[in-house]
Length: 244
Image (cartoon, rainbow, N blue to C red):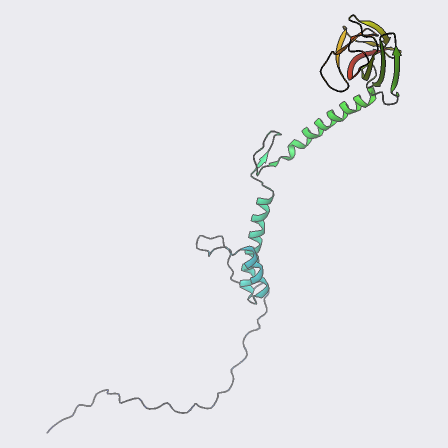
């Protein structure tokens, strides 16, 4: 008798049938609230396997647009890390100069230098105060005009310091010049020269070449020599004086 072995043989797949009726909805899921017992996963960007730290602007944008609490915390941390890095660079915590000589760019002055600067300012203020105390600002300009047969001397004296200096502007008018010094006048009353005799040279008022006029001051006496007839000479001198 002949036999036929029938095994696990699949026939061709038939066409898909129509969609069945929708089933009954399942029970509602758990409430999505986050409390102190919730476990939230977020990226701290400090592990070796962490992805690259997003930039400051990207972090802020993600914070404003993400609804996922985990991603929100991740980008808040990234934002804070960027701000912290920025502040460290802004205050140059690793580039402080504890001296007044550093000129290299990028360094900030160490706060310990504050007391040194304060002391130097105090020294300067004391020096300025001493100058102001010695200044003779209340004494008016002293005009003096003297003459003899050879010269006329018109002078404006400016007292600078008590027991200090006299600054004077001089106009010498030559009438009949002499080759030797002729005494013509004195310093303002109460002033005398501090030190040896001082000599000064004056050019004519036009600045042209020619004979110059010479003036000396000895103690409190002024003398003039040389120059050209009917010629004016101008100049300014500073005399170290003692005021009695």
